[in-house]
Amino acid sequence: MAEQLAEGLAGTGGPLRQHVAEGLRDLGAVDLAVYSAVADTPTPSLDEPLRRLSNAANNSGLWFAIAAALALAGGGAGRRAALRGTLAIGATSALVNLAVKSIWARRRPDRAGAGVPVWRNVRMPASTSFPSGHAASGFAFAAAIGRDQPWLGIALRFLAAAVGYSRVHTGVHYPGDVVVGSLIGEGTGQAVAGLVDRLQPPRNRASSSRDQQREQPPGAQDPDAEDAEDADFGSLR
Image (cartoon, rainbow, N blue to C red):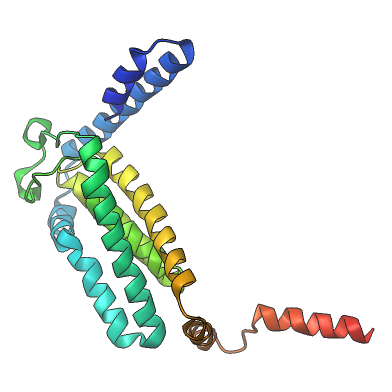
């Protein structure tokens, strides 16, 4: 991917574009070197868990299962978070698979030539490599969930990062595919969550606020309440 962009820039001339083209070539070399290093490093205790994790995230199955658990056990806040996460996956999948992958048609890695152990193998997708749809969907889901439940969002980002790495470990993506997919997913997830908030009726918005207050630890005080108390005290003075 970086090599294709570099070639396009190098042919247009100009010192700045030449400098950017050289930087892109270097990034491409790093991308290939990291992929080869992962392929060459023996990790027998990680191979099977990462292969299973990669397969679990196929078609966003892992994220839909988490969304279902949230909807069933998380009350009103859990259902809203599950809705945001599901919508974020849908929007991100459409963006990545229908738009980005068709614009930049990067070939999948030659994992046999790179020496990826066969016991790590998962099914090689027929789609192009750039960017990683698994990474994009995972980070989109985590970003949308984290809108209302930040700690859960952080945990889900770690899980999404593990899924992204599993795609490199099993040989079906270059590291750069995963990095860019993660960034696309994070941005799209935040955008979808914000849009859902703006479209949410005021009554539901107030209910969501009450649910968040219930989830606060005992003794925690609402910052808005503290501001109101400070204002009242100032007026008395």
